[in-house]
Length: 382
Image 1 (cartoon, rainbow, N blue to C red):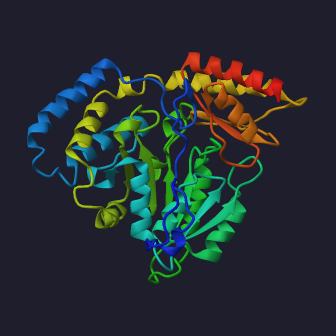
Image 2 (tube, rainbow, N blue to C red; image 1 turned 60 degrees about the horizontal axis):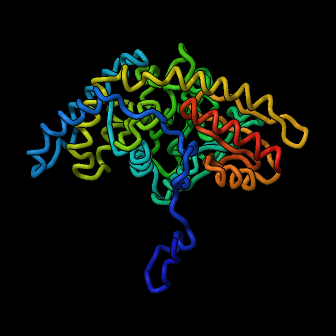
Image 3 (tube, rainbow, N blue to C red; image 1 turned 180 degrees about the vertical axis):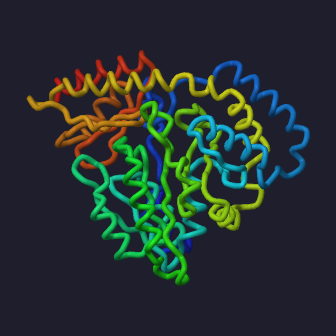
C-alpha cells in the first residue's frame, strides 16, 4: 500500500494504519482464509442463475430493503440446523458477517462506550471499534485458549461494556464456548449497568458463530438461547461451511428489539437484489451446500493427529484442539520463516494469532497431502 500523502486530511487515528486482509496470492494451494475449498454443486449454480435471471429485468428498481423473503429462509434454516424457533423479525442479513458486526458496533458502540472481547480472537474486532470510535478492551484467555471466566466477569463488572463479544468456535484458535459459560455471561450481564448509557441499559452478549457448522454433531448453538435471553445476539455467515464466501452473506439472530436497533444504522438498500437472489437459491439447497462439512471435519481430525506426531528441532508440535475448519499449531521461534518457506513452495497458510503459532485451513484431500509433504520438508530443512 502506498503512503497516504500528508495533504489529505486523513483522520489522525488512521495515520499509519494498514487495510485489513489476509494475503491473496496466486499459489497452487491456498489454506489461509478458512474457506470451504469445494466449488458449488452444478445444481446450486443453476438455481442461482435461474433466480438471478428472474430479478435481472427489475434491477432498475431498488431491492427489498427489508429482504423479508431471505429473512424467512434464514429463520427456516436455523430451525432445521439448530432447532431455534425464530420469526423472520428476529433475523437480519447483510454483506457478510463483517457488516453485521459493524452494524452492531454502530448501534451499540460509539464515543463513551466500551466493547469487551477475549483475546486471542479475530483481529477485525478492534478495527470495528476504531471505525465507530468505540473503546475496545480485552480479557485474556487461559493458556488452553478457553475463556478465563472469572477474569472476564471481573472485567465486565469493572467496565460496564455495551457489548461483550465472544467467538465460538474462536478464530484463530478454534476453541468452542461451552453453553454453561455462555449462560453464565448472560446472567452476569443481565445485572450490569452499561457505562455511558441510561440507567436501565444492560450489556448485550454477541456470539460470533462464523464457524459453528463445523462443530461436532450434537453440540448446541447459541441461537437456541435467544428465546430465553433478549440481550443475546448471534452472528453467522454463509461464507464458511456454506461454501458461499464470494457471495458475501452474513446474518444475525437476536431479539426483535436488537434487530430493530441494527435496522436504524443499516445503509438504505444495503443488500442487493442479486445477493438476495443468490442466497435464496443456496438456502433452497442446504444439503448440497453443506455436503462437504463432514469431510472437512474428518480432515481436521486427521490433520490434528498428524501434526501432533510431528517434531520441530526435537520437540513435538503443539496442536490446539479445534471445533472449526482450521487448526492452530506451533510453536516456532520464527514462525514467519516457516510461513515464507511454505509459501515459496506453493502452500499458503497463515501466520496469525498468538506469537509462534501458524494456522492452516482444511482443504481438499489433495491440498492437505501437499500441505503435509511441504511442511515435513520445511521443518526438516529449518
